[in-house]
Amino acid sequence: MSLLRSDITIELLNQQGSEYLPGYLGIVILSLAPNTLSSRMPIHKLHVAPNDFLHAASVVALADTSCGYATIAHLPEGAQSFTTIELKSNHLGTVKEGSVACTATAQHLGRNTQVWDAVVSDEASGRKLALFRCTQMILWPKAVHR
Image (cartoon, rainbow, N blue to C red):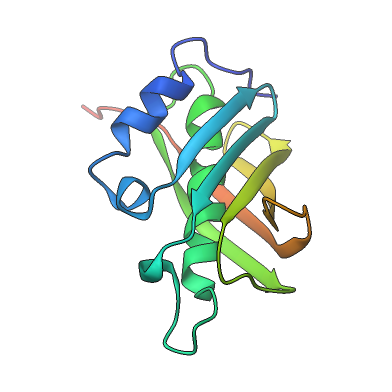
């Protein structure tokens, strides 16, 4: 199993994502520990679909970002990066205001793949809004052939 990397911090993750989609959406990493990561996202108009409900893509972006950052923090020594090879979400409810919270939990931390589950909930009430699962492929430096 991969161990939590000591060189990856909450501050580093939040800073690195600030000029990318996670920063634009207002996603903030709150905690990082072995096998888990927690985050939140305040709801603004940009997160909402024209039907005035939270857009499913906003929920997926929060869950995928949380699982992706958790993968970065748990990459095996010598690994170069990762890429998502599969994701799935089940949406159970919605909110129109406030913030949504996400907790990502490792299910498998292997040398070549990691599997993460995430629960997205209404931060105020704790009510579950979505269940999410993704599989990450670990990327290793290419060997030089001579």
